[in-house]
Image 1 (cartoon, rainbow, N blue to C red):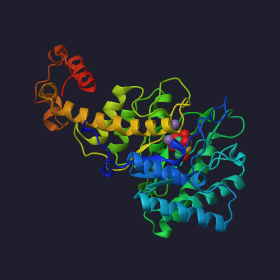
Image 2: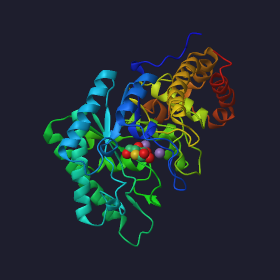
Image 3: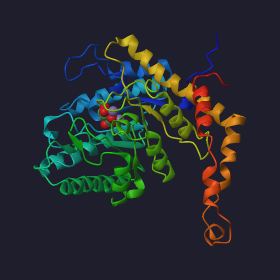
Amino acid sequence: MIDQYPVTAADRFTFGLWTVGNRGADPFGSAVRPALSPVEIVKGLAKVGAWGVNLHDNDLIPMGSSAPERDRIVSEFKRALSDCGMQVPMATTNLFSHPVFKDGAFTAGDSRVRAFAVRKAMTAIELGVELGATTIVFWGGREGSETDALKDPRDAIRWYRESLNHLCAWTKAQGWGLRFALEAKPNEPRGDIYLATTGHMLHFITTLDHPQMCGVNPEVAHETMAGLSMVHAVAQAMECGKLFHIDLNAQRIGKYDQDLRFGSEDLKGAFFLVRLLEGTGGYPAYTGPRHFDAHAYRTEDVEGVWDFARGCMRTYKILAVRARAFDGDPEVQGILQSNAGGTAALGDAALGGTAQIDPDAIATRGLRAERLDQLAIEHIMGVRQ
Ligand code: GLT
Ligand code: MN
Ligand code: MN
């Protein structure tokens, strides 16, 4: 049977070393799968058709490695990348695992911790550049609190800004042309994380010294945990030119950060997200990597991990085809066009009082959203082509 949804390099699908490398440990139980080395992960990802792999500094180089060890690990990894034709488009820094970050990294009350975090990020950025990364993600998982008795959130936000300003200025001075993508999350591992949503991040970016080099990295699970619409968060970021990266996965509302296989929950949300990214409903498509920040169920062995990775990419591709079919459907277009009469920009004609606007007449008209949404559901279910 011919595969109608073959994954190719042009899809720009990426996974983190920490995603397929996740060993299934949780706060109540230990690992259920063997560790995969970075080289094994690169080979496995290439085999399932991914275009690239992303990493934290310590996913590749364990903390405390000597300089020769580091160089050996990096050169082995580079060889695997070139043998497999794999890219490293994004790199990030682990600013959350070591106990020194128990009260935050860039927002830690102790300025020595903040300095250590900034230096660690600089080293991670150098590693990213060496591997060819063009985007640096910052996920402030520990940047938050359980109690606001310990520090004033305004200090924390100021320290966060100071660290990012320093990193932006230093990176610019190196002439690397990198872009920073800030990733929000409402909670976990902290009780409350500062700058909890993509919307908070978008505003925070406007307060930085170099806002043009900073954008966002929204994650499906994180916006959903906050009870918010990932589609709206991504649309807002796209609309202001700030969607620098994206973390695709799935999540049920009201739960811990599940990081599930893309599309495995809220299929309709995933459909509208893919439609947005692919630009089938209008506006240019997102051109960055499609990164999956997810991991396999704890029930799985290594084979199940590769099933998981294939599933993320395949669901994305199927939804892209379905989104195109939805937007090309004459009945869909008809409904959208019938609603388009009132979308003219506000201008003198509309506001100057010359045109007749009858609110009662307009209010009586139904918008056919029920039919339109049913058509979306039928396209998702594959009963309309
Ligand atoms: C961690 C987190 C993710 C972030 C990664 C990047 S680390 O796995 O849960 O959401 O994107 O730091
Ligand atoms: Mn993420
Ligand atoms: Mn997550």
